[in-house]
Length: 171
Image (cartoon, rainbow, N blue to C red; front, side, top):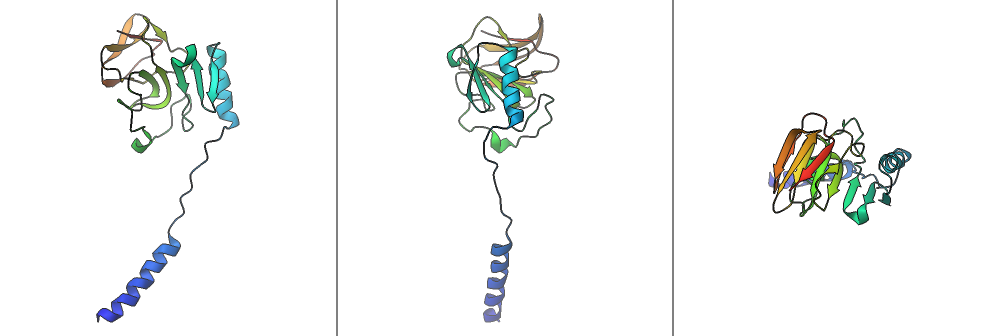
């Protein structure tokens, strides 16, 4: 009986091998839509430099806008948890920095700050901020609408934000 099972198992394995779905990954190339988004960011905040097909830097790289290719200003994309950079301290935000995202749960377009100034304007860069991450070893990041505190994140933590954020502060 065992001799009859071996050919059947080999036939099933062969069918699985030859009929397995092919997975293809989209190449990271600029699209007209992405270039328009980059140009809009540069128009919103002059003085930036496009450093890659989906990234703009200001202040010699101390402020970096990374546009999510699966995202839109409306924030309708779904990003799998496996898309988050593993080396980041909090939700895709590199250690030593703090970030603002246009979607909850550290997803979508992201602006990264590597220096702590008294106030950072986020108006026009990522649309509406829906989450913040503080990947620094100390201090607090706060999201405001004018003088109204919407959310805060202590070192090594993050927070979802409700309301319209126009500035971030850090201490």
